[in-house]
Structure formats: structure tokens, C-alpha cells
Image (cartoon, rainbow, N blue to C red; front, side, top):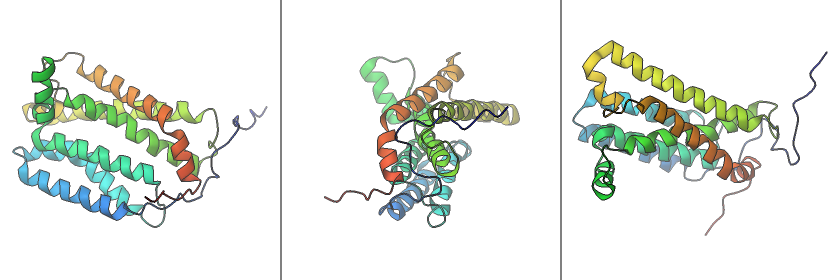
Length: 225
């Protein structure tokens, strides 16, 4: 017996396959990301760790370029990729355990560790939630479905867990050279906390951004000052 179509809620999203409204500053965001990577590489003292930390930003740069004509992304998603890339690049420049912002927070709030990596893992759920959501809305029958948000959440949590496996494999492959990449700073629950924060990031994105995302996917033009 057929299970029937996926349940569709009222006010379903845009039809799959449609292009969102253009992002006028897409080229600027791409150029600024490339510039940030170049400056970061010049400033970093640990190029091996820098490479490991900034690979996702490089992939984001490639994604922005590859989708510029055939599959343009929403303005919201381009901005999230840009902001997430900056978070990654800053972490790669200093290594997460030594980012000045986290060091200042240690002094101000009396933290026992540099918590900048927590921002990175929150963004690891926040930005990919919109990416996965956009792909599913535009290229699957899930636009407007009650299953959309749960599946986006599961995809983000799965990616976070896979990233922790990558960190583990890196540690096994290169030993102590991967210590800065792991960035546990003596926290025995670092892996679990990282995945939890990615889950929180995905939940926050799915709570705050769907209406704006839907408007942009429906082709609403960016407002002008």
C-alpha cells in the first residue's frame, strides 16, 4: 500500500526549481572571502593547522563561484556562507585556542578556556541549516512539508558528527601535529559540546530564518535604501 504524498502544510514554499531573487553583492562577498583567506595565510604562524581549519571556507568560496549562474543561491545563504567563512578564517589564523576575541572573553568573564571554537560550532549548524533547507526546497518535493525542518536538523547534526570524525582521523594520521586542530583545551566533553552547539545553531536558524528565506526563494527583490 502506498504511503501517499508527504504532508504539505498551508502556505507551502516556492516550487522546486525556481531561482531566488539575485544577490547584488555576491561578487563582493566572494572577493572579500578570497582576500580574507590570503591575509589569514600571510598572518598565520601554523600553516598546517590553518589549512585544516579553513578547508570549509575554501569549499564555501568554491560554492559561491560555482553557483553564480547555473544555480544561484539566495541572498541570505550567500551572506551566511560569507560570515561562516570569516569565523573559520579567523580561527585558522590564530588557531581556535588562541583567537584574541576568546582571550579577551577569558579575561572579562573568568573563563578557563578560549571559547571561540564554540562560536565556530554554533555556526556549523546555523549556516548549513539554510544551505540544506534551500537545496531541499528547490530540488525536492519537501517544500512546505512538515518533514522539512526535522530533516534539515538531522542533516546538520550528521554533518557535525562527521566533522568530529574528521578531527579524530586527523589526530590518528598526524599525531601531535593535529593538537591545535582538535582544540579540546583539556575539555573531556569537547566533542559532545561541539555537536550540541551545532544542533542549537540549526534549531535557531530554523526558528528565526524560514520566513525571510521563503521570501527570497519566492523571488522577492532585495530592498533598496
